[in-house]
Image (cartoon, rainbow, N blue to C red; front, side, top):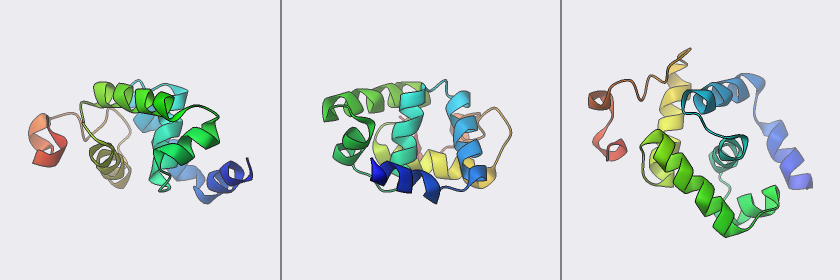
Length: 109
């Protein structure tokens, strides 16, 4: 549990707020948002599972739901979208998703 506390303290509040906005823009659940937050801190699925107190299979289910809601496939594509979103700091809706033609080829599927 100490690792989770340490991980939480590494994100600055504005980044947390932007991640919350991203999660709301994509209708992500609290757990799905938490999976992304931990992944942005370089946690692997096994670490995420341990920190959340769930199985790795459950983390994989969260990722599948994230893929469905964002339209992106793969952890890297989701994290790249989050980075682009946070970098552009839009208010809403998600600037990354507004136009599929704006998405890099690696983010489209």
